[in-house]
Length: 257
Length: 325
Ligand SMILES: Cc1cc2nc3c(=O)[nH]c(=O)nc-3n(C[C@H](O)[C@H](O)[C@H](O)COP(=O)(O)OP(=O)(O)OC[C@H]3O[C@@H](n4cnc5c(N)ncnc54)[C@H](O)[C@@H]3O)c2cc1C
Ligand SMILES: Nc1ncnc2c1ncn2[C@@H]1O[C@H](COP(=O)(O)O)[C@@H](O)[C@H]1O
View 1 (cartoon, each protein chain N blue to C red):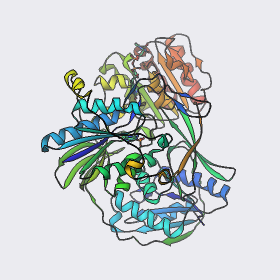
View 2 (view 1 turned 90 degrees about the horizontal axis):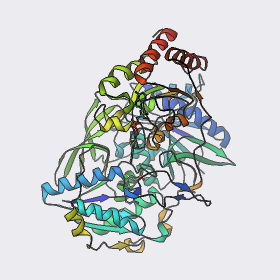
View 3 (view 1 turned 120 degrees about the vertical axis):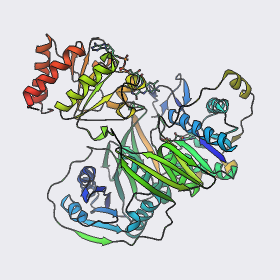
């Protein structure tokens, strides 16, 4: 089995700045692997270990995304590919999925792709479903348990708001992981040292057979602002009885209760 | 040329979901601003009664794909049905709710059609003749304005409480669309209600507890009961989810649920930026914390400095007295 995991590098904290030309500035914030992608990596590793398979991690991002790819290699992935191109600086989730789909086709012989359900920075949740469409594969999103995975089929539980769906799919397939799908492993120091010199190929847009015109430009972000400040609040003082009486009075008067 | 604002109808047991009524209200606003009709896209295996409900909620037309293959949601089945209706009737805008199933659908549908998707939006309007959507990202630290390219329809998945339902509108025209030939590559084996499932996103009142409660017993004793008398449900900070006091599905915040209820009560929660990300757009926020400098008070509408173990029982009793629950 050959599994691919899509890994996005994101800022650890979201206390980002907005630049005068309305871009997100995360400089100075420690970059990490998107939380949900750690579950995707772990799941791929576990099933690959069972079937003597292999795991390739792919990230589309700036050159420093090699840090996250190295961590995935240290966790046990066999190969990594970085997709980096100046033309991709403002690519949205759908455009990114198109490029990664082309990269996966270039790798060839991939049976399953694991993604996170969502990135903690852009939070679109769109990449996995778009990727599946561009590959022409079925998709299983919000997966919180993989019951079985064979050379031709997979059975999973999808966790929705108030239902749990058990779904079967043919392979190849795209799966997106939710938190607690498994317990992601920590890479050992030995492994981290071992992979530090492993070369990571970098592909540009033309290496996957695409050009800027293929990316779509379906969505433009025309403005970015910080959230509006909340109206200033009111502290309620007094002893416990006075406080709760005043609070409930205010909530009832403003028809909140 | 593309024309029409469509709402993809979600339904259960023959009833329109609340989100669909809200979206028909929002869709009507957009349709009027664009000078176009409001349509409902109804997909399912048995759609009887749904079109009337959609007309009553404001739709002038209902595009219906009815087929046994649509009994359960599958990405392949629903993408194919929606695509067939869209290609036959060319709407300008398609709105859906932002439930997980609709996020699954819209991500695939937009890619399939090569059109733009504004995911999980908190606002959508017509500005100078074009459609603009607003959505938070980066744990609600950034509010983005999205505009669409040339491709149609423009698709947006929309959160709860963005639109207002319309009451008692009239009747409309039904347009049937045949289900296309499609191979559905996934098979739903079982759908079950999740035990202890909570739909925090839909709750009008959420009472959340944090590490300040001191112990899981205090949480269980104090938080669900206050939530109950307030007519809501209970949530939690990540600190106590990680500590195993309560299930992950109750977690509010950047890596949990994003909520915007009418009333959010934060009890013994410090107000870390990742927690605020999940609840700062709630209408009214009440914070109870023994530390007057806790950051949660910066977003609170009403703040009480005090010990949750003393405040909460008194508060529960007072709410009960005042509201009779
Ligand atoms: C990548 C990442 C993602 C994260 N995602 C989330 C998320 O989704 N949701 C989330 O909540 N957190 C998240 N966090 C964690 C977040 O940073 C905080 O650690 C967490 O929210 C703290 O929880 P807390 O407020 O319950 O605990 P604490 O920060 O320990 O605060 C406890 C509060 O209780 C008060 N207190 C103590 N005793 C009493 C008493 N007797 N009466 C009244 N008040 C009392 C204290 O003054 C204090 O303010 C994330 C962190 C990271 C790094
Ligand atoms: N630039 C990227 N490179 C690799 N994988 C990505 C990238 N962007 C998104 N993904 C994957 O898609 C998931 C959902 O991201 P998003 O659609 O941004 O919410 C992530 O958890 C990753 O698995």
